[in-house]
Amino acid sequence: MKNMSGLRLLTCILGALVLCPRASLAQAVPPADHPAVTVKGQTYTPRSILARNMGTEADRITAFPPHRIVGNIYYVGTNTLSSFLIATAQGHILIDSTYERNVPTIEKSVTQLGFRFSDIKVLLGNHAHGDHQEGDALVKQMTGAQVMAMAEDVPALQAMKPGGKEHPIDKVLHDGEAVMLGGTTLVAHLTPGHTPGCTTWTTTAEEGGKTYNVMFGCSLRSPAVLTPALVDRFNRAFKTVRALPCDVQLGDHGAQYNMQEKYAKLKDGNPNPFIDPASCTLEADVQEAMFHAVLAEQQAARP
Image 1 (cartoon, one colour):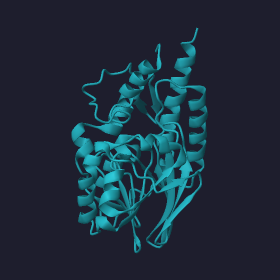
Image 2: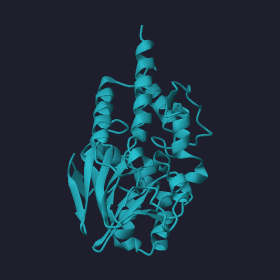
Image 3: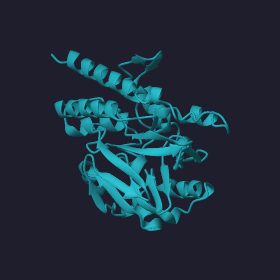
Image 4: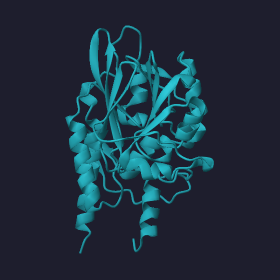
């Protein structure tokens, strides 16, 4: 690319509906679909990962059946855009509001589970892209929830103004900071790269007399062009994620933890399919392999 506008265009194409949430995958010119990596017998390309995460426009706005994942943690998002409710006796925590147009859908899912949307007291997010945090202002308006965000993502969030709404930020968080409500503690881990403030959250949940470590992963998908600063950020992110305790791995897109396949296995009396420590590093394995392949391809192309 000869200039920054060209670089932004390429990034926008690869992150369709993420950096440019109103764009359509069908309208964008597909990027060159390479490199390809194979992890545990499955082959991935940049385009296949993006399609896996985002699905169709209908997938992005259609509610997936709301369900309990483990303990007091519930899924209230769409077919491909995750939103999680953590219920406590002192009010609830919501992670990821997704698009503003999805907020009524999330509200309906929360209600179907037997909770009140107005009882949401804290709103968190994984990273400052429209498909994950565009709805923050509307959730704040509807619930009065305290909106918290990682410091490094604050500038991007402040630029996110659906319908002209100012993006609310009531508390700025930093790496390792804890958010507590009703006996639940969530810890914010800075896992930068996909965005500067990409945040992986960890907590614990109790089920069947046991305590499980739960990780809400932030996207580790790299852009098509890697600068030295981005390389450093991603290396930090991969190292951090791999060191986190994990029995239940979740993600900002359901496909990152095989949500639909696991949900299909939910039956009374059967082991909880979401409790799956063996899968906790699978998404990191896929994205780190792609990251190194993109970097190697970029370095090979230099004169």
